[in-house]
Figure 1 (cartoon, rainbow, N blue to C red):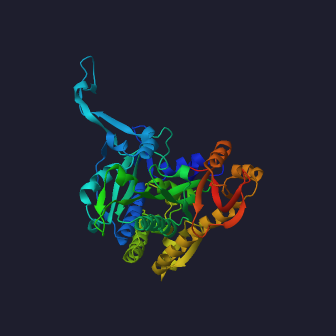
Figure 2: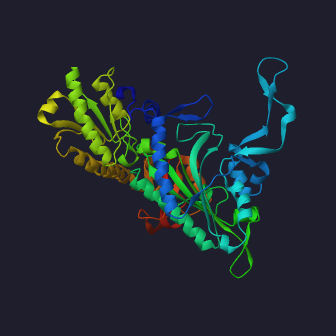
Figure 3: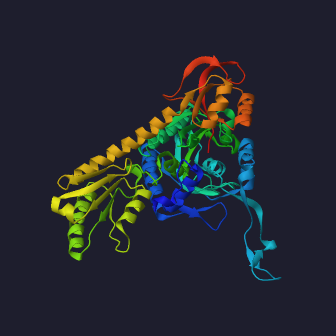
Length: 492
């Protein structure tokens, strides 16, 4: 089964597409650019959702839900916002169909035109800030800390499962604050929540930083992001957090009486991650045998494959497996015994490897005689015969070891593909090989656009965490002074 997956080294793009489909994560739907997330893929997303939701609530946020449709006039109230999303908007113009009088099928009823056209939400700032106007009158009403789990539509022309689809699932936080400092602190807090989730649960090393002015979210004063490196050396923006200033409060006239009794505009943030994280999980850890899932996000932790020839052997093996399964489940792990009688054990091994299950256990009559089982780690594919005595405790401990090992491997890859570059000639050579290029930049949009035009590389972020390199230097393109290196890369 694993042989159906293209080698990663031969065709990275095809390898990715193969994994998404063959591992039963998702498939293209009948609607152009949209996907069906299959149960196994959705189970991983649910794990992400559950953990993120817990982290949001620990920081004081509550879930709410806002409409899917946004009046077209709302988008025009914030100029940068509408400009940023105008080309991606799906527009509802009519509310009824009718039988086609000239032939079979149905047509749009021309008499059912909406008074005001509606936008299918590409993001919810406008509808939410129109709502917040009714919620906020005084500093006593602040802060408002809301998050919603929802779907959004951005009419992408070039789509790719999980990475870029016309409709996708995400969460979007929208908060309102009494002071600028509180809003800035919130934007920073949430980008660091994303970074912690990526590192601790996705086993994904990420760089935290600011986007340049040209790469900011439409309508934001500042955008913070987490950037990850995929195994082809390209960058993937895995999450963003935006300080919106008072832009949306001014657009929707959201004022409050401050502690001094004076009216002021509310300060805002928004932040979000999407099912794009699924793409990151695949591309950062997968290999030529399939997915490699960090245990903390794996829907199945342990797959057990019984090996037998007779009914008597089958009953004995299954009995021991059920006992081990019970002990593992009591320790909090999810276990599957693959007892399909119409599938060969070799096929089962390949299938569970493809699905990225962290540990596989095989057991046959000889194992029962020796009180042992064969244990295979998915991250290293190492195989070991182990005594059944204490095996449950060993497998439980193995989960933390696998989680850590997957992170260390991804971190080592990133570090070995991160380069300090000081000349434009070297830059042009290195960018073809992929990776993060740490370069001096003069801070101008003109230089940034020239480099993008000539090399297809963008400034992924101006780092703020431990990866930041503060040092004097000269811009690789213009030669003008620079105080800090930024990260350039080609990106998804």
